Figure 1 (cartoon, rainbow, N blue to C red):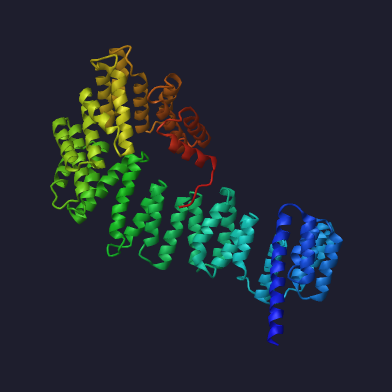
Figure 2 (figure 1 turned 30 degrees about the vertical axis):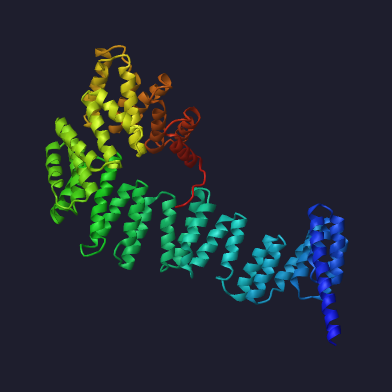
Length: 600
């Protein structure tokens, strides 16, 4: 008996090894296009074990267009296993290959009609249909299964995958709305996939209709309000997004955290007015709330950003000044509020032209004990700037030098060195200024390095043929007036240079200075004229690529002409490939063209 069993196991083992070799060989034949040889081997394997190798044998017959044989084979297996849908699906595939669509349709409808009321069986049948390449009926099986089991929450994830695969955007979005009803944790995934699938405003508008209907039916489901807020943000409807989050905060009677977080996002999108309104709401919740002080600080930062971005009215300056003063009155002048003293001083010095008040405030700030060292350095440099505005250049250079020596080999030291060089340029000491700027061209801060390079080239280009530098000195005085935001006097000085020093080499520099003045005055259309003249008359000079980039930025962010902006960013890429703006121009060009941008 032992000998018999041993021989039996040996035979079975050898048969299995032989089958394995035949399977590998059949696959090799199929891969190399030798379909007949592959089919013969699959037929041999099928006869040895007619269920295991049914599919590969049947597919080999289909590849040889032996459709009648394949049909006969499938019917034989259906007769033998009438409850196995796998064979039925294969028969439908064969009918499709034979061009007998009505017969195939009849088979699929029969599968639907006889669908078992079992979640596992339904999933298995749908999977078999999917593997057979029939996505239409895969979806129909899932939907029929829902109806059969009286549960609309079933099969959402596979349906989402199917709709994504077929790029059926609204069906996918509707399924996410379905699953979020009971599983709000899918919100982040829903946002990512919807953003990746949607192509533009029209898609978001259609989705908004679905979402509003869902909110009406599920008014207590917070997740849909959150999704609606996100949808408004995608369409840059910032005020509407804020309205939703404020309404939710009132309903939940929370501490304002979600509004606070949204305001930070609004700031990053330069929606300053909406952010300010949001912070005001958080502040209104009361001093005892944990976000009261952060909101008081951030509303000031936001108003400051609005001012520095040029999107302000005169009353905004006065309002911001009062807000800073109120903060300092409420919390005192100490190490915790020194940041507000610094920013108030810059506002008073450069925007409100109250240089005496700014000087006094910064002198107080630098005397505060235990002030964080970086903030102390910033306050000293700003105090130096105010001394410069007040025509005290020696006091200014002393402070810049203190900071440079106090923070060796840091970006702060490089910034202080640059301000000292700039001061020397303003006062006409071009030799010393250029020596400092040439060192800074290798600065680790790209911004400082770029500014140093431009200023160094300005000095070099305009002292090469005029060793006295008289025309450049007059230009530097105009530049100093721009720095002080005394734009009318600056324009008069610039217009005088050609009369006083004819045949100077500052033509493109004067045009760029005028463009900067017009932008400072918010005369954006007027700024285009000198910028266009730089590109037309001085296409290879220092400011040419800067002029093109500035025009692109004006058209994109101030004049709302995205097509013109895209054209100008393209010009940077094609005409100025070595420009320092090339990377930023590529990024902005792609964004305007509508290229997909990874979500953050």
